[in-house]
Length: 249
Length: 249
Image (cartoon, rainbow over all chains, first blue to last red; front, side):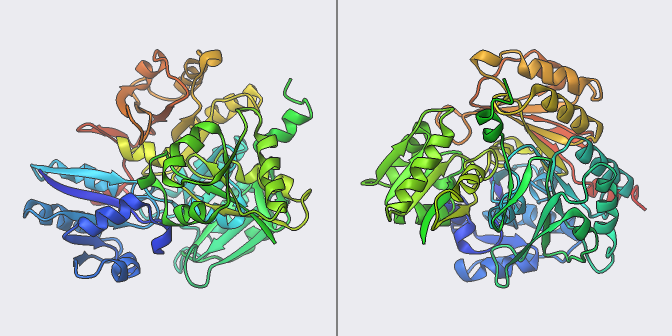
C-alpha cells in the first residue's frame, strides 16, 4: 500500500514539531509542500527529493504527492500548523480515491491558534471559534454569517488569513460585524511570524484592532466576555474565579 | 525570575509531544499536574519531583506550582493536549500576580481537536468551533447558546467533555439543539482514547450520535454542510471542489 502522510509541522521551527512529525519526515523519500514551508524544514531533513507548487496550485500539489506514492515512494506532504486545519489532509483524502492503492495518514501539528495563543498567554482558554477571512474558496457572505454567529455565541475568536495585499480591508469589515455584538473594549491580540524570526505580539482593544492593518503572517485573537488582559498576557478565563465566588451554584 | 512553564503534552504518548515540550520537561526540577497525565509522562522523565492534586483542585495545583517556583525550582505544569485550551495556562496567569517574581511561559501542544481530527481524517478542515459540554465552570445556558450559534453559523464543531457519569444525557441535549438547525444525516465522528492504548474511532450521523452514550475519554466531531464521509474518513472540505466547479466566481 502506497502511503502519503499529511504532516503538520507547527509554526516552522524544529522545536515546535512533534516527534511523530519529525520521524515521518525523516523516513520519507519525498517531501512535498508549499515552497515557503519546505524551505523552513529543508535544513533538518537533508537529501530528500522535494516537490512543490505555488499557492492556488494545491490540487496539483496533492496529485504530485499521490503520483509519487504510486511510484512506490514514501511521501510526506508538509503543512504549516496542523495538517487538517486549512491544511492539505482533506484535499488528499478527497483525491486519494482516484489513485488506487494509496492511503492517506494524517499527523497532527500545532496550528497557529495554539502556537499564537501560547505567545499571547491563553486567549483560547474556553470555548472558541477559528475562522479564516480568506474568500478564495469560501463565499464572503458565509464568512460574515460565521463572524456574526461567533459574536452572538460570545466565543473567543481566532482569525486566520486576516489580510493580504488584495484584501486590505477584510479585517476591518470583520471587526465591524463583531462590533454589532461585542464591546469595543473587548481585549484582543495579534501575533506575527509565530515561532519564527521577527516574532511580535500586540495587545489591543477590538476598537483599535478595527483600525489596524495586518498581513498574511499575522494571526488575530478576539476575546469573549471572559477575556482579560493580565499583565502583558491575553487570558480567556475558564471560570475558576466564578467557582470560587460561588456564582455557578 | 522564577519560572513556571505551562506545557501542553498532546494526547499522551511521547511521540505526540513537541521537541520544545520535551526539552522543558527534561530541564524542569518539578513536574506538576493531574495524576493521570503525570503517570503518562513519568516514564520518559525519571527522577523528577512530582506534585499533583485531584480533579476540581486546579487552583490548589497552580498555587503549588507557583510556590515551588518561588523556592527557586524550575516548574513545569503538565497539561494534556494544549496548555491553553481548557488547560492550566490561563489559571496560572490569573494567579501569578500574587507570587511576585514569578513568570509564566506557555508551551503549546496538540489539543484533542487536532489529534482526534487526525485519527478521523480532516473533520476541522474549514472554520470550526470548540465547545466543552462540562458545566462545572460554565452555566449550561451559555453552553446551549453557543451550540445554537455554532449550528446557525454552519461551523464544524468539536465537543470536549461530552459526557461523564453525572452528565449522561448532555451529549443528547447538545445534539437536540444542533438538530434544530442541522440535518440529522450530518456526518459526525468520535474518537476515544486518542493516541493511547485502546484508541477507537467511529463515524456516524448526527441522528445516531444523539443516541450514543460517550464517556469523558471521548472527543466528538460534528460536521458542517461541507463535511463528508470519504472512505473511512471524516473530511470537511475547504472548497477546492467549488473552485474547480467555478462556483465561487
